[in-house]
Length: 109
Image 1: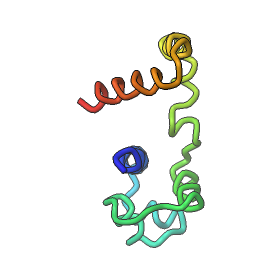
Image 2: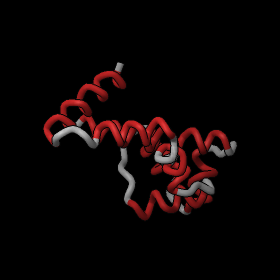
Image 3: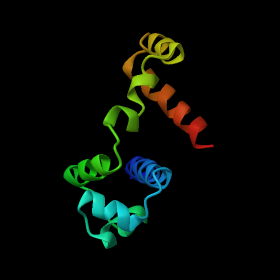
């Protein structure tokens, strides 16, 4: 349950930040995305979930693409990430689970 909330919060925060960066109010975003203004408010306040279709509308309204949103182009190309993948690939599956749990604990602080 916590992971799902974390992903939701990640998405909400990124969308809110991009909306503010573009200088859009919630109402302006709703007009650009062809969504009800009340929905945008509920969504940003974690009172509504978004379908993939709705996220697509919001992304288009904010001129966002998925790789930028999730920072995919940068995170997988970095030498640090490649080193991490190389090191963790040496572990057995159950050991990888323990390493990932430890990393998550560090990141939650």
